[in-house]
Figure 1 (cartoon, rainbow, N blue to C red):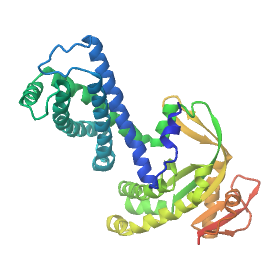
Figure 2: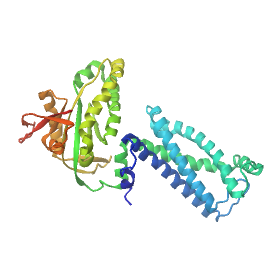
Figure 3: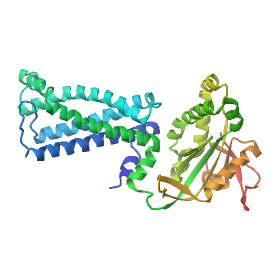
Figure 4: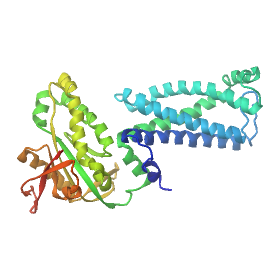
Length: 376
C-alpha cells in the first residue's frame, strides 16, 4: 500500500492547506501509539498465556477491552499530536533536542497519568460488568496506582512518547514531505520529473550583514524565513533549501500550476513580510526586501550522499533559475519568470506578464525569454 497516497490525497473538505498539513503531521502520532500499544498488549498476552495473574490490579484482556484499549491509545496519540504541533512545538523551538525531549516527556507523562486515571476505571467496569460508580472499581483502581503494573504502564507509554518526540523533531527538521519520501523510498532510485522552482534572494544582504553584524543578521534571516512559512504552506510549496540569504521553493508541476500557486506564493510572501514590517523595524531597524524568479523544467530527483543522505534535484533548470535571478536587478523587477513558465499560464487573466528582451544568461550561449510578472 502506498503510504504517500494515503497521507497526501486531496481531502474532500474545504480546509486550508495549513490545516491539512497539520492533520497529516498529527495522524502519525496516533499510529505510533496504536502500533506500540498493540505490540505491548500482544507481548504481555503471549508472556502470560493470556492469563490474568494479578486480578487485583490488572485488567483481563478480552476482545471488547482490547478494542477499547486500542481506540484509547490511538486517541491519546492524536491528542498528543495536537498538543505537540499546535501548542508546544513553537514554545520549545529554541531548546536543544535533548532538552525538548526531557521537558516535553515530563509534561506528557503527567498528561498520561491523568488519562490512565480516566480510562482504567472504564476498563475495570467493562471487565467486571458493574457500574463505574461501584466501590469495587475504585478499590481496584487504588491498588493499581500503587502496583508494578502501573510502573510498567508508565514505562510503556514513555516509550511511545519518546518515539513521537523523535518523529516530531525529525519531521520539523527534514520537512514532512522529505520525511515521508525517505520512508516510502520514493527517491531511493533516481526519478525524472517536471518541477517548478522559485528562487528568492534577499536584496543588499551583504550590506545588511555588515551593518548588523553576523549574529544579529542571523536573527533577521530567521525571522525572514519564518515570516514566509505560512504563505509557502498555503500555496502547497516545499522548501528545498535555505542557502544563506536565499531560499528555494519547489512544486511538482501540477501543484505549482494549480490556482497559480507558484506565482501567487511569491506575492503572498510579500504580503506576509509587509505585515511583519513593524517587528523587523523594532528588532533590527531594517525592513528587508527580496526579489525572485521562477522557472520550470525536467530534473532528476534522488537520494544522494554517503555520510549524510539528502533528496536533491539536479538538472539544467536549477542553473538557469539561479541565473535568471541576476536579471531582476537589470530590469528593476521584483519577480521574473521564464518563457517556459509563461506558457503554462496563457489563459489566466488574474496574472499579468510583461515581456522583456531576450537575454543572455551568464555561462549560457542560448538566449532566454523572460517576463516580468504581476498580479492583476
